[in-house]
Length: 251
Image (cartoon, rainbow, N blue to C red; front, side):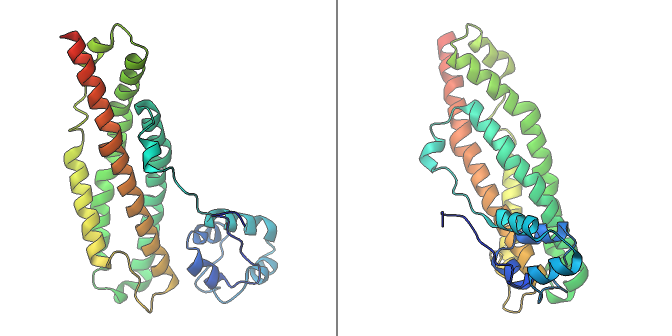
């Protein structure tokens, strides 16, 4: 079997599938399959009972469970800034928008069903709401203000356009300071969420809803760490170098 390819047996129980591959929960919800109350039944049984297309559902379940290895850190260093901002926008920003909404839905369900299980649950929910209120507007700021400038700068720099230095002087954004304060606030909130959950570790008696919620937040955390690495350690340093070179040429 190819690396990252997952095969799910139709005889496997719903509970077993979700516990082993938590992302399959989103597919089950799509088809109105309750992975809590129907957890003991197999995909074969559920599809037959509901009259669902088993082959389609199995394919979607396996697709959702696939893992894909990201590019190496060294490879990112070779990408031009305009390509990096497109990658960050279409991969990381889209992921965050989707996953923050899904994580919020899971958290609301957990609060409704299992609030008594964890005295820190409401505190966690408030921290997450604060985090969402920072990170989503920050993405809009990047997409509408900072990234368009970086695309223009990259094209002008690599094409050796005569107006490149003027572009820096007139449109220059303080990219090394852009949203840095908001990023630090978001990182502090992420640390608080880690502390409250023991780095998103489910308790021994965790129900499926708890397990899914914590794993979704772990994925969200890991993605954000990678996202900020690309911006602060790869993208912005390249932009600062281009700006400095162009400003020195003008002088």
